Amino acid sequence: MEKDNQGVLWEVFIQVKAGRPFKHVGSLHAYDKEMAMQSARDLYTRRNEGNGIWLVKADDIVSSQSVDDEAFFDPSNDKVYRHPTFYKVPDGVKHI
Amino acid sequence: MENAKKLEAFQAKIDADIKIEPKDWMPEKYRRTLIRQISQHAHSEVIGMQPEGNWLTRAPSLRSKKILMAKIQDEAGHGLYLYCAAETLGIKREQFLEWLHEGKAKYSSVFNYPTLTWADIGAIGWLVDGAAIVNQVSLQGTSYGPYSRAMVKICMEESFHQRQGYEIMVTLANGTKEQKEMAQDALNRWWWPSIMMFGPHDADSAHSNQSLKWKIKRESNDELRQKFIDKTVEQGEHIGLSFPDPDLKWNKSSGHYEYGKINWNEFWNVVKGYGPGNKKRLAHHKDAHEEGSWVRQGAIAYAKKKRSIQKTA
Image 1: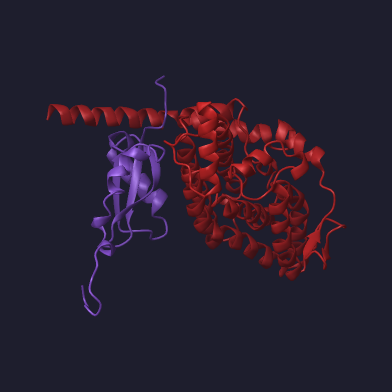
Image 2: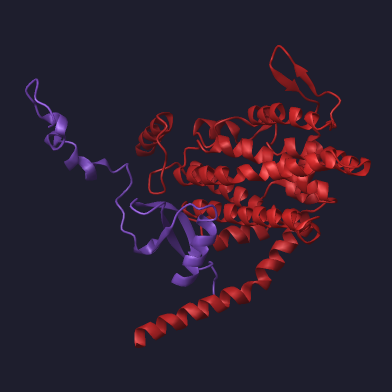
């Protein structure tokens, strides 16, 4: 008999309501898309948690390295001019 | 040398309450402890469905049957969240089940006790789930990200479980003489196993210190047990039930209940597999897994066939 790991791993994203971003809520095992969708509904939306589900096979996700590898995000640290607080605005100027 | 440095950085993250994620470096012992603890937790959710399933067809009303089904479905879900959290540590689902079936992995001993009457379903929800909630609320703050997130979700869902159990106890306690006796009998049998769920006393707990230092656990066994007892005693007395512990009494100066000596011989006996239901629970899980094999094989074949149709189309 084939080694049975109960399907492959899928990551589940739920949209709480229209207009909101889809947020990661957890994972599940399933053999195909259809089964993954049914399991996601039964596992993650039993109490009106949302009205939209995205499913992605975990293998298909490209992710950054761990936070231990800090150098990867270095380029964002030395560019303070990307933040509005970097700029001086004369006293009394409003709505900017 | 390298490792000592990494260990120091790791502890600094823990001390700063930064969660550890699957790809982060972690000491091997941290990983092993989590694998053991999270899988044991997952197995407990799944095995815990059995004593409740025993009453599913005999629940006294359609209402109670629907509620019990929803609760059991939640437990299955909790098991699955936890297996997924444990898998992020590099162990496959199949392996966890193998370890369970070989007796290498444990589940909470409390599920080895039988559910003799309908009142036991009340006692399980009120006491066993009540104790589990105290533990799980604390574990929301665990240092391992996936485990912590699973706990947050489980705690949100778990809150109805304890109330449904207590409601059963309230109904029976306000019922006929026989019903009240049934509730009292269930409390008598489930009280000690429930407070044993928190594990050995701190002084005798093999894994506790390191787990607290790494914030895998946030409170000690005895602290959690005390919290549970302090919360629960009044709930029982409120409905006219008494606890099977002559030494149980309120200590005004400490602000806590004092309780009697726990029978650890019984605890270790059940942990080691000699409880009233160990063999049955494990055998039933194996059977269900093996008998369900054709469903999994069918699903694999179906998925394969669909993929090949897509390729040729």
